[in-house]
Amino acid sequence: MLTLGINYSQMHDSAACIVRDGELLFAVAEERISRVKHDAGFPKNAIQACLDFAGVQAGQLDEVCFGWQTAGPVYRHDLKCYVTGKMPLTYLSGLNSTLHFLSMWHQESGAKKFAQQFGATKAKMRFVDHHLAHAISAFAYSGFEEAAVVVMDGRGAWEATTIWHGRNGRLDLVLMIPFPDSMESDGASALREAGRGFVSLHRFEVSAVSDSHKTTGRQRRDTIRPDDGPARACARRGERDRRQAQKYCVRGTGRM
Ligand SMILES: [Fe+2]
Image: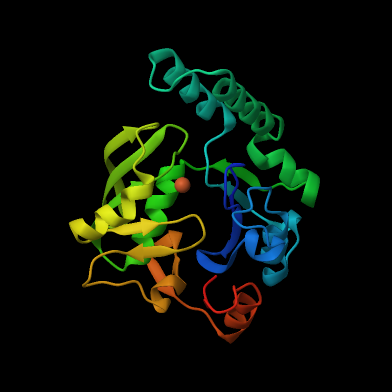
């Protein structure tokens, strides 16, 4: 089973990763190759780097998974916020919402763009709830069998904050605060004050925010193994992975 993961919302930090039989082979943010900070474009360079690393063609992929819902739910939630007064409807805000929807709709939320860039594929296209994608990446990398997982995001399609109960390889949604009531900018600092928690960012960085369980390089290399359950993790990367990853590292940080 060969799976390509794509983060593409046209908002910020596009990225891609590739997973074979549950093992994360390679992941890179588009900005590390394009040199455009927070590059929001379709991550064609990141995808190509993933395919190159795995030594495969797009036609060999079994699944292509986007870490965002399709265009429709995003636009519907925007309209709901305008109608209910949660967000002020102005010429610019309405225009932005509509243009974003039309652009993503035209691109079939990225699927059409993928086919245009990499050719036709029989891979199954899947669109994953954005907050679930955040939560599972944080929990799976945490090393805990059971944990509370808090996602404080700018926005998902309709979510701004979600709280999950992770246990026995499962995530159960406990609380959802809808967009636009977002606490993203204060999220990390608030969690640090509160104690144990994890902050999942869009560029493959997962930060544990309790003093007793700081995220280490080893934990960043842990990979999700779906056949062990949705939140199991393993650590298995070799020298080839390290060299390939360094190709895309920002000088001085040593981080992907
Ligand atoms: Fe996000």
